[in-house]
Amino acid sequence: MQVSRGVPTLAAHPTVLTIGNFDGIHRGHQRLFALLREKSRALDLPSTVLTFEPHPREFFAPDRAPARLASMREKLIGLAEAGVDQAVVVRFDKAFASLTAEAFIEQVLVRGLATRHLYVGDDFRFGAGRAGGFDLLAARGDALGFEVEAMPTLELEGERISSSAVRSALATGRMDHAARLLGHPYSMAGRVIHGDKIGRTIGFPTANIQVRHRRLPLSGIFTVSVEGLGERPRPGVASVGVRPTVTDAGRPTLEVHLFDYDGDCYGAHLRVNFLRKQRDEEKYDSLELLTAQIARDAQRARDWFATHPL
Image 1 (cartoon, helix red, strand yellow):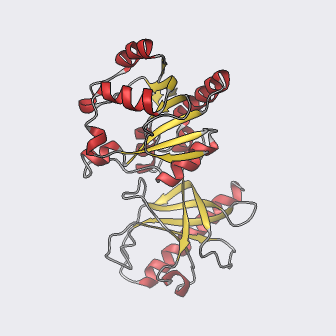
Image 2 (spheres, one colour; image 1 turned 180 degrees about the vertical axis):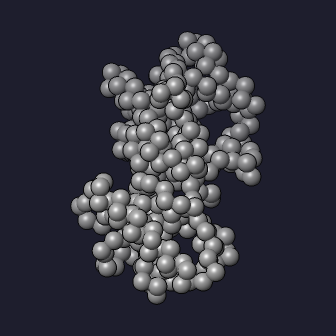
């Protein structure tokens, strides 16, 4: 997949386009990308996704913005796995946010991306003050030479599939429901970095995975599988949170204890699949109490894998 930063002044070729944040790439997004691929093949044009960094809600109200489900790197990996030909990442800043709806159509859709067919969600809004919507796109598309198609909401047992629904499931520990909305278990990926190595001293060495999310969509202790260390996933138990027993820094961390693994994985890029939530994060009065609880967490995860083999 080709990735470009910013919309070109003049497009090199026409495109079949969709626009959105696509946080988490849930089943609704996946259905949209399937339509995008189908239309791109029919028109023999590249399937193209226009997305934003930062998320517009992070720009307008950073303190109230939702936790991200995926980093930009994870999002781009997901787009590539979905078969998208090219991704255009736009920096969402004051200048971009100030574009009128008409300017967005002319500068971005027509000149910058030479759009021939555009898919948008049924609630898509664009332009300064969110002034533009589907009706304006359809009218201007007729005049400027592109077609517009709205992607209807996809539902699961009466619930609208959305990134917000995934966040709600994760925040309340409903990992099975999050997996149904996503089409797969929720995961986080990152490179293994050096930590303070406290886990090694108490008999539970952990892989400390670099977290790029400003806020995490979940926290607590989880039964997990880990990809990136061989051909098959490895079972383990993970802690997501701020480690209140060992530090007061308040910085979110992701630590994974891998079962029956003693190799060196520093620098490896791992994907952690969250299969089941065990409990919330807690603060303990001593490392001894923490160690005893980790032993119980690990045994609980092993017991689960005994009936749910990878």
